[in-house]
Picture 1 (cartoon, protein in one colour):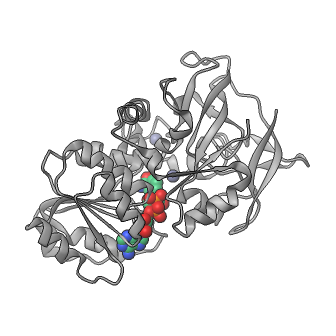
Picture 2 (picture 1 turned 180 degrees about the vertical axis):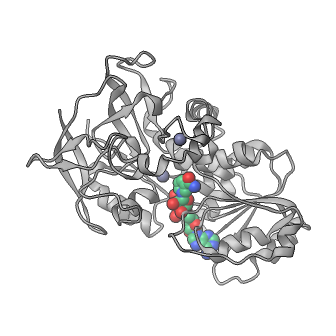
Picture 3 (picture 1 turned 45 degrees about the horizontal axis):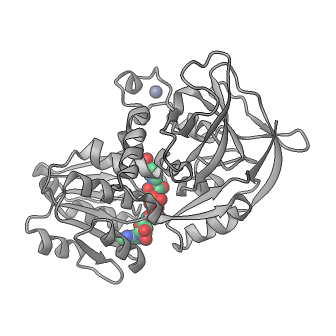
Length: 368
Ligand SMILES: NC(=O)c1ccc[n+]([C@@H]2O[C@H](COP(=O)([O-])OP(=O)(O)OC[C@H]3O[C@@H](n4cnc5c(N)ncnc54)[C@H](O)[C@@H]3O)[C@@H](O)[C@H]2O)c1
Ligand SMILES: [Zn+2]
Ligand SMILES: [Zn+2]
């Protein structure tokens, strides 16, 4: 079928809006009319060649929409269902068998190669040439996407679909890191280093879990102001400050039980570790480029401190995304406060506004 999509044809280049041909869904796939798709750093990193995704490609991995057709073997979805399309996993590797789907040993290829698991692409351009699609097994910067039924999550129909796409990545990454990985107790001190879409999602989850204090650290005053409205008890503007760790200790005494690193900056990651109390845990979410290294003090870590990376909030999407949607509907996860909406045609403006920090979470609305 004919669809409209944002196509990346060259590294660091502009997206072009093109008419493409989308394949029919296979027996285990859904055809989803995308209502809106969040834009995440990973889409731009993908376009810029960080993950060697071949071009031309359609990015987008925070898609939300309505099922339009289902493959012959699909039993759990029907046309009209509202869905969020989450990240893919293989289901058979050692980590998948332990239900650690977000740490699937095959997930890099499934996310980044721009093809289905069998190497096939789903889109062709006007000249008939293949376009790498199936980015995160969805490629949602388009009016329609094909999703494998295993990675689609049915959501309640009374929830505003255009707010739900970012739960597929940044939302469940931040919130899941807190609710699934850290599992704080009320009164635990928590610091969030970097309050973009991921950090703010973590911060809202920390408020739900009853963390206190909740300290937000960033370089954008506007983001810090929003962090305070969303539950931060303290904020620290990192601009020009060399004493962020001392400030965290001044607020907390011993340091924080939990720190969340989302800035992807090595010196900030180090501070997130140094801010920990004994037996505290730092969760690294920020995506640094391959080869980035950090030095840590061995005796400091020896006192029970834990440093670990987390992917996609260690979420099991079919259970966790509906839980986040419920929290949204209860007013506890007001994700719309961080969103700015753009028509698909303005995808380049959305990317620019996201890169320069003007917009926290760009969401692309697809033409009806
Ligand atoms: N682990 C995962 O599974 C996963 C999933 C999604 C995104 N990510 C990564 O998480 C990171 C955050 O994503 P995002 O969408 O929130 O991006 P973002 O760029 O909006 O957020 C990063 C924040 O860090 C702040 N920051 C930059 N330098 C800082 C400094 N010196 N001190 C304090 N704050 C500083 C920025 O101002 C920004 O607010 C990105 O690196 C992204 O690629 C990881
Ligand atoms: Zn796996
Ligand atoms: Zn993402």
